[in-house]
Structures are given as structure tokens and as C-alpha cells.
Image (cartoon, rainbow, N blue to C red; front, side):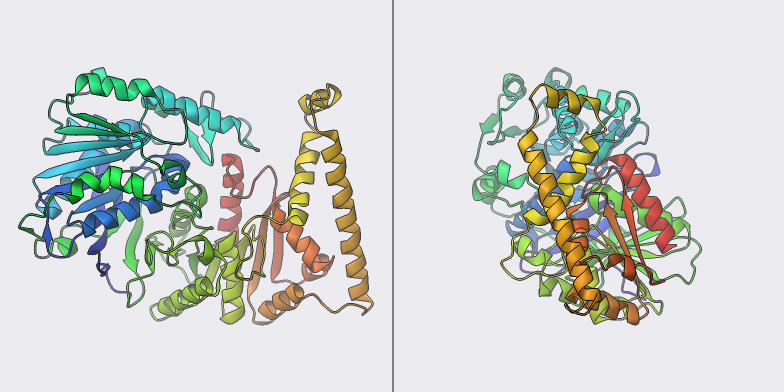
Length: 585
């Protein structure tokens, strides 16, 4: 079998995955970052935000934890109950109180593992409010750093505003709930979050100092910082550059020096004490396995160099179905878009199908966190890392493998299926299968036409859109131009298909590649959001040959209506989840 979890060696110290037992028997997934030998007497606990913000911040917090280890500090980052790789889901009752307790649980685990006497809490956005609430429950609390914090009602109001900006929204949402960037927040949780940040109700007397690091890219909640300053005499307020660059989509996020210095700069002047790393602390203090609802999960590195990380899920009963391998969706870490991979993996486990959620270096928790992400998404290195992962898995599993990838993950899965023997590939909204170094990650104009015309057709069903048109508030000229371009593209596609059929043009390279994969007895399942640019790419590239390919018994294509590229409407997530379960179990 694959080795049990081991530490990740490197010049910055050790990073060890673990699970912690929290409130109500929940399991929290966490990472302990430890320096090599000697450490400071204060440890650092990083408290992430929630929802899509937590996905954007994931890489940045890993970087800060790595830097803290370089400075001689033990640190820990973790997923709250119902989020990330922790047990539960976002709709569990009493979640807010669980999250505050999770901070306390994580702090106590960090203190126990590091043998430090103080813990410095660092929270971002909603995480800053949770850290502030938990600080009074942790007697070893030292300093607290609040990054881009604001009163809870302000942050909830921003969530509601974000939900209104979505191009697609699920119908029939529970009354009072908010669907924002792929995550559904129920009324009970929203009400609880809104109540946070009232500093008059938070005990701050045992906190040594508070650092308020304000965002530099938007109007801040000045009352939040003002109230803290009024109640705590040792409050420092800073507004360094870099928050806007930090809080971007995962493939763009980066940590700026000014922001790093604002969070860790005060720590670097403290010389590490003689507190040594306890013998066996990394290996024995906690297990990197958990059992919940009949599902066993194990977090481990799968290669000898400990550069490729994955989370394995299996149920009490196993069948002979292939091992399902989830590849990163773009630069999102192994939980997948909107935590979809976690949901599907655990449901597959209940059905007896084992799976692994991989991070290909340098994504998620794999490889060097300092490496640039964007150039790796569509690259030979990404395909090579995936092939190496498959070889490592085959050394430990005798069963065939199925690959699942969304967007860039679909690109990688397709190339792996060309290079190796794979049982099946599920390609979700792939944007291309041809990519050269230096190509833009933006959607080409011709493919965007398919998406834009889909939006036009959807708008035509909305009486409000027609009213705007008659009032002269809609861009009619742009709509006509988009429809004209779509007509021209479809005409060109039909012409190519006819030319291929009569032998004037050869079979397209994409059709040749798909045919080659099918000849290896690999099943190919395309899944597209209706109107996705990737669907336009398939239609454009295959020149009308797609209907002929779909006659093959091992290839399918499914379209999911009312969905966008990453399935942010929660209703479309449910449709995709059921489709994946049907294809994989």
C-alpha cells in the first residue's frame, strides 16, 4: 500500500497534514508547518475566510505559513467544519458556533504539537472575526492580526451584493439565503455572521496587541478599526499595498512584499528561542486519517520526493470499479470548484468507489509555493506531473484509473489519456486541447461568441430584458453583431464538415486525437455548461464532425443548462454531481 503520511522536507522546514477532532465529533483538516530545529516560543494560527474567498486565499496562506517557518515559527492552517477537506457541509446547523470552536481546537492542537506557550492568531475577512471571537477562549492568546476585517453585517452585505453580480443564479433558493460565487449560505448562518464584529461584546483584555491590516483596493469599514482602537490601547492600523493582488482568482493570486511584511514583519525581529522541535511531534501528535459517516479519508504524498499531495477517500465496501483521480480545476486546490470534488468523492466512497483528489505541483499543497501558477496550467510540466502521479498510483493499485478534470484539468486529463492507458476520462468544460507556451489564458473571441449568443437566447426568455430593449437601455448593435458572427461561424463549420466528408480537407487533428484515444479502449465523456466557450471550441474545431464521433459507443457529450464555466449556480452543481456519479460508479 501507499506509505502513511510523511512530512514534506525542504529548506523552509516541515509541512505535515493532519486531522483534528473538533466540536460534535467533527474532523478538521489542517497543515502544521514547523521549522527545522529551533523555534520561537509563539506559534501562529492562520484563520482563512469562507466561501470563494477561502479558495482565493488558500495559496497565499500557504505561502505565509511557509515564510513563518523560515522565520522560526510553528504555524497551522486549517479548514473549518463543513468546508474544504473537513467533515460536514455548509448547511449543517449551528455552524457558526462550530467555527469559533474550530479556531479554539486548532489553537490548542498547535500549542500541543509545538510546545509553545503563546499563539498568535492571524485571520482574514470572516476569519478575522472568528479569530477575534475565539481569542477570549484561548488563554494562551498573544497578538491578533486582522486582515481586511470588517463588521459582520458589512461582510454579509458584500456577499449579498456579490450574489447579484452573478450571470446565472439558481432558481427556488431557500428564502433568505444567499448564493455567492458557487457557495450557498443559509439564513441561520448569515444571521450569525452578521452579528460578528461587535467589539463591545468581545473580550479583548487578554490579547497582547491587535494589528488591523486594512485592504488597499476598496473602501474599508473604518468603524471596525476605530472601535477596536477605542477598546484596546495597543492597536496598530496599517494599509499596505498588495491585498488586491492577493484576493484574486486562484490562477492570478500573489502575495506582495508589503502585505507579507505587515503580517509577518513584526515577527522577524524576534530571535527564535531555544524551544526545540519535540521528538516525534510531526509524526505522532495527530493522524492524517479520518473516519466520518462510514468514509475513510487519508491525506498523503504519493511520490518518493513528497511533492505531489492527494486526499484518498474510500468507503466500508470496495468494488472493482476504477480508482477515480480528480485533477485540479484550473488553479483551485484539490477540493475542486465550489468544493464539488469533496462532495462527489465522498458520495462515490459510499457507493464503494475509491478516489483521490490530487494537487499537481505547484498547485494546492504540492510543490514549491513560490512557483508561478498560471504558466503551469496548460503546460508539458503539468501533463508530466500528472503522468508521474498516475505511475505512482499504479505502483499501489492494481485497478484501472479514471480521470476527472475541469477546465485546465480537462486539458491535462486528455493529454494523459493520449500518453497512457486510462479506463475513462471525464472532461468538464475544457477550453482547448492545443496550447503553446505564451498563449493567453483568456477565452478567444470566436469561442466567446458561443457563450454570448447563449446569454442572448436566455435573455430573450426574460420579459424584463425586452422592456430594457424597448426603452433603449440594451446594446442592440452589439447583440446583432454577436448573432451575425455566430451565423458566420456556424456556416464556416458546416463548410468544413462538408469538405472533410468529400475528401477535400483531411480529418482535423482533434478528431484524430480523440479517435486514437478511443482506439485504446478508453471511454471519453465530455460535459459542458450550455453555452460554454469550450463547447464552441469543440464545434468549431471538429467542423461538424462531432455528431459522427458521438455514434461511437465509448464517447458521450452532456450539456448542463443554466450553468456557467465553474458551475457557480448551486442547482447546476447538483446536476453535475449526479451526472458524475452516474458516469463513475
